[in-house]
Image (cartoon, rainbow, N blue to C red; front, side, top):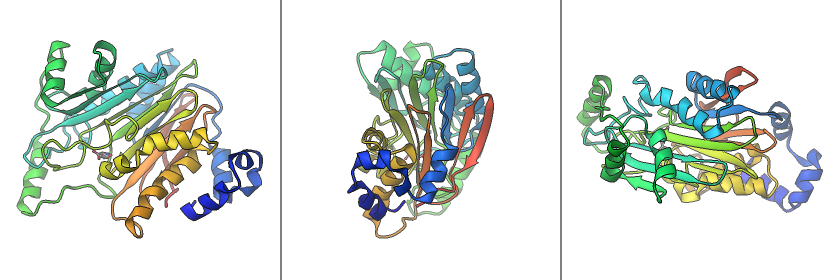
Length: 325
Ligand code: SD4
């Protein structure tokens, strides 16, 4: 849905949207049909993270809370050194240091985040500890690392030989340009709904490859990379964090759902807000996934190539989101 048509529709008012499905485009109607997942538990993640999704889904099936399941699920990718955008093995900053960002948010609206953390693999679990064990929401840099040590986390070298080689190759280019493009993503945003129907979410990343030291993207910023309102739904982002932050994307999506939009419509509107600032189709990628309390889901991106992974009723599937701006 283009922004223009969204605006046209929104002049009809949210109530009209709710009671008159015939005014929805055929794409919306199709999406509503296929995405009506009116039961729990389920797991919805950005990108092709089949194994992580399955771990979270099985944890939910065993009765785990939504947040515990999500933290367990993403831990798989944080430890997977083949994944160069999350956890150990993640691409370093331009000085060659791997720094990780993560946040969590639960069904009670509590949240925790860690920013630019060095030497700690499982930053989503660490963000959860910030939420549970400190009076704060965010710990950054050396303070987050120190807190991890106090909690018994092992310090690890997060830079693998492969990521180091790729960074050295990038250095040879000689001109500073951090790398984020249509393909270069895998940041995991994971939304879980547990057996009690409670929603929680996690977002974890090594961020933009070859970023400036100290750069933090959207992923650990509550409201930008992730937002949950257990009365309404949840949303999570991936892609160029600077643009997500400027539009507070995940919070925007949840608020649009509060006003009556489906998760799909809300994701589309949030992407429109980004694209329209750019005079045409920008050369970077941003994608969102979202879910509401009815179990409906939405996914939308600026460019094609985005996929999401859904676990439900023991079925775990990576789905190409053909839904693009
Ligand atoms: C960031 N949003 O740091 C992250 C990057 C990302 O897949 O999503 N990569 O801007």
